[in-house]
Length: 145
Image 1: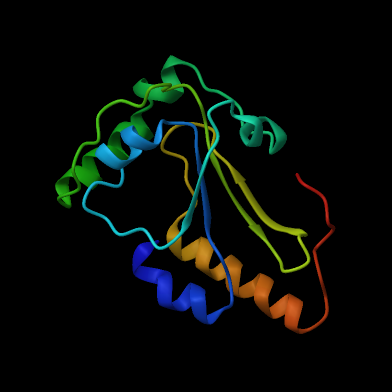
Image 2 (image 1 turned 60 degrees about the horizontal axis):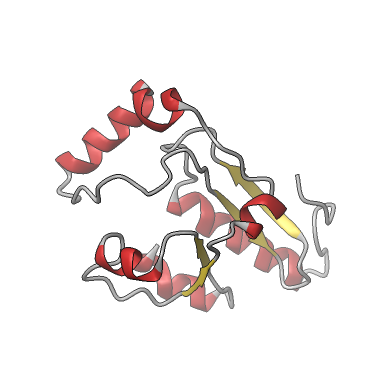
């Protein structure tokens, strides 16, 4: 996502990251050595997770899923560093794109810990939302799915 910062800015879009982990832990693990040009919101009570319908997974979805393990193997093969285990391996996240009017344009709720939308998909959805706003079309239906 950081590599796409210039394109995201050119679209007039903003990225907000929401995390329940303590800021010190995020800095020591996930964001160590990175200059993240986005807003990071600390949500220790996970209110945003509940409000946006982000659920939880079980042991299979958190650690034993073949698809998840394959994804992590590919990341490690490409040289990504292992960040260790999350404080709550069962909490699922999601990806959302809203247009300038606040209408939801794209939703991807994780089904397991490896189920994220790709950065390319998110940037495409940001572009679609920006174009819809410029064309005066507004949100798809204004609801959260």
